[in-house]
Length: 154
Figure 1 (tube, one colour):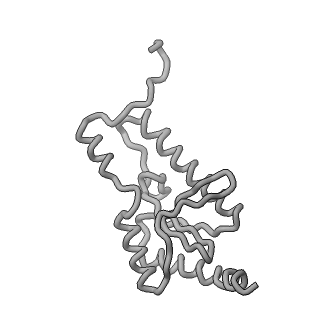
Figure 2: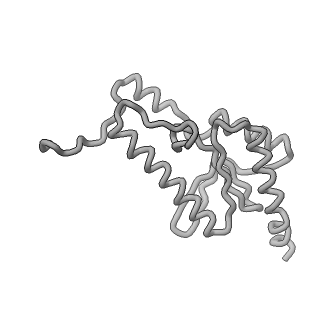
């Protein structure tokens, strides 16, 4: 490595940290399961972790209401840089900074692709009260309902 050049992106510093990171779930997190449970109790049916094939993108929302064309993402505060709780780690910044920036860029690209394809995107932070998040999702579904009914009859 040449002097004064940036170090290559690093990996987790210890085997224990590596095991810890490997155990982090991509789906079925506690906030996601709670929100799904409340939506189900409200009589809503949905698809979980469905990869959507869109023009130029393949987003994978956590919860998908296909008929209403509503995509819900339940974002972790750390992984998606929550403005309220997100923080940059003090260790291994050469790895984490770019990693978290890519996550946020991917989120924005997914939002744009879904919106361009006629979908409504709802993003929920893991710190939000689940009941309030579900009320917000239900409001979006209610607003989308007339359009989805018209599509089936027309």
